[in-house]
Image (tube, rainbow, N blue to C red; front, top):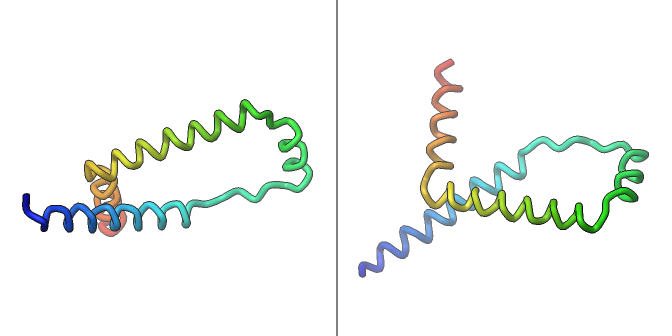
Length: 86
């Protein structure tokens, strides 16, 4: 096998990771109220926390699949083209 293939896969993974990091870092986060956050902590059970964790792992898996197939980059390029033309 050609060693250039491994280098290309490595740089593709780094680029996809960079875009994922930028997307997560720039996603808007709601500012929680101090009174509601205290109540949510009390009502949040261990099962709910496990469910949230499993949901985030599943979401991360599908993001990884999208990045590996190139769908993530294609979606971002397509969105960028529509925002620049309008």
